[in-house]
Length: 581
Image 1: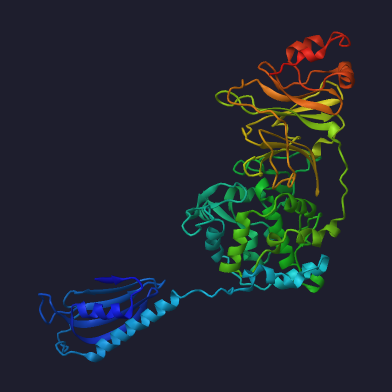
Image 2: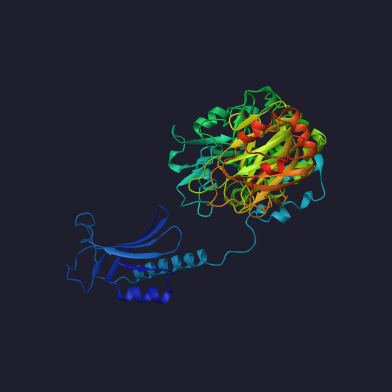
């Protein structure tokens, strides 16, 4: 066997001069499984101790990538290739020249395959600057129609082809998708083997825009921008619910939305909220569908639409205001941009414009839902009051305490935890979640919400208290410890935290904490509380009114102050009740 990589013509000559050929009688060429075979069916060997009439088969194989050529000669069993009737002793220059010519042809093909690729894009979508040049300075319906004219014409995959495409587009290893053995499910964010595609214990093809909302057949049914891998059970649980966060006032919210879904998913009878970190991805996918397939009938009557009044009959998906908000707070990630790029280059040859230009969303739809003014809550009525996140040994008793005015609208408030290393949110906690927050309300003008949960140890991890009302986001408080963090996603995106100036270490006790104290309204400072404190606010009833005006607002030493609350506080120096390091 003689094997070569990118052989030269001179090398070919040397191969023939050193090969065990003596004479050749006949040649044939055939293609099998993407390989080219140039076969000399009958030849004699030289320099080998075989019968001169023995038969030999010689093959030239080129793999489908044209990266290597292999020359192989072997002796087939006598009787299968019976060439004794041929005059093999006669030397055939014609046959030899045919084989050499065929081999040189292969070299030319190989050279073409390895020649430098032209720098010009193969498809229009590969040059994203020129791709959108026709819609510059447009907005509203004109922008929507302009984008439709750009993206609507594209290659359509069969629904069967979608399986293999998803194995590349949603591979667990986004940098090596071909060799990655797993895919990431959209609602659980866990990695499952690609081999479980379509199996009961595996994953399915999830239409983000449900089929019942107007997806009939053709390109819209197999559009890769709208299809993601999803756990079969979670996919069934979602059904055809439209996207939106739970209606907190009506109750019935389930969190997580399914036992196999991510912990920050939620659902009620009508709405479905995916994991926080892919909410923007899903919003932009639905916006793409509304633009790409929004003009099927006269005046767009038969197309897909987004609205705040979802309707299967009208093919209207939503909630539009929620999707606009998700697009704002969860900008495109590297993974989402890579997915968009690969759909362009490998499959459909079009792009999702809202991944490339998230700002298009507000330019098209803001006027459709009207402008909602954010009503200020006021930092003096809602703030983060205390936190414990680190101690000696295994972390215990970790919590965040939030102080609210009794009249504050609780349904709009969330606690967002940020990772200091990358500025991304890692948890979202609605204050209405009774399973997470413990409520303390003894009749005063303030209510305390305490969440016991694992909290990252820093450095520069952040905690934000936000008010979310549709597309309206207000950051009421944003603190961090051991440094500052600038949020790159979520409701606090673009805002830098305020370092409280203190931190907890591995030497702290599990009942230590960091909390606010103060002697004047609006002028509080963070202090360290030593072992023995518990996250309960105890200035109650009439005494809190006095303390709010004259003394301390903050956290106290549990049972000791609970006892003294029944005494007159007017003559008591409450500063002595706080322990500091």
